[in-house]
Length: 144
Image (cartoon, rainbow, N blue to C red; front, side, top):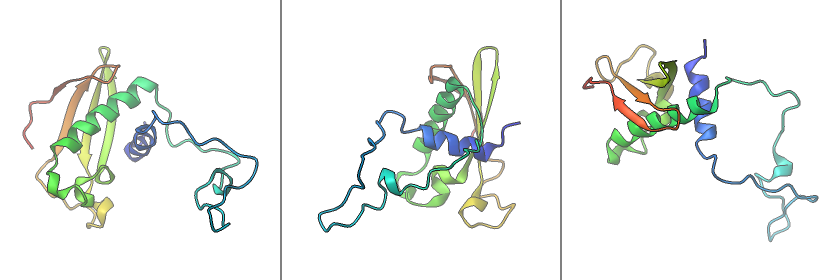
């Protein structure tokens, strides 16, 4: 079974899939002062053996991202800088049945420094039905 925190990491990494990665250059890029840029391609510690956190098919990742964006849009706008109202505090579980993806998003305040087992709201969760192309078809009729 896929661990939910691996899915969250995967979704956050895939979320910006529309931009091109920087091109590798033969020499180390330098700033005007002549020092190497901190995040250039040459300064990244690339792994020799990549250990995957999770393996999902593309439509599952798209479905999870669409549901995650729905949840984040429902959070209060003024609290967007707080960890408790960010993707960091959420856990995503993806399942598939009858050609649809069902995405459940749970809140995990312990990822923001709260004590384990603390709940900010009683039995909070979000459940969405999402198509394979990332269209949110419906939200479970539950009022958190």
